[in-house]
Image 1 (cartoon, rainbow, N blue to C red):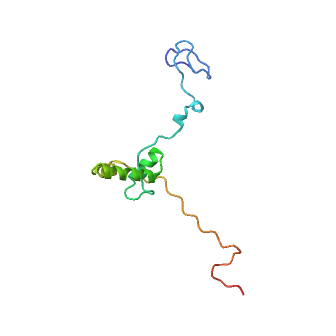
Image 2: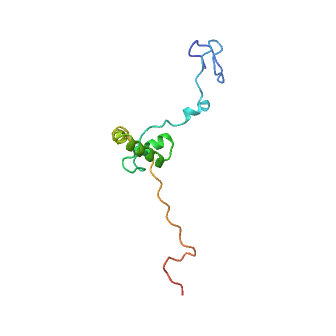
Image 3: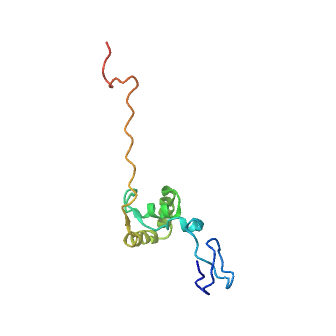
Length: 123
């Protein structure tokens, strides 16, 4: 491996060039934790919404509970003479839809103990 700044020969384990001090390319296993995390995008989830998914999108982006975001948005709408409603409409238009993360299907109820169907009479 060679330095991209001065052309000095480097070992594979070198992190900096001994000649010019330039940092070498970061190996994939040495990547920073921030680079390993996927980038978060402000989107409207189509599976977890009440009206348009704006509050659910903000809750997911801010890593908060969606009910808390809805309450804060409602208070902002009431006490700011309707600015919250206008902000909601703008966010509804501007935020892209996210069809990605589909919800898990609801678990089917477990069979009754003993294996007999409900409502059948025994002897």
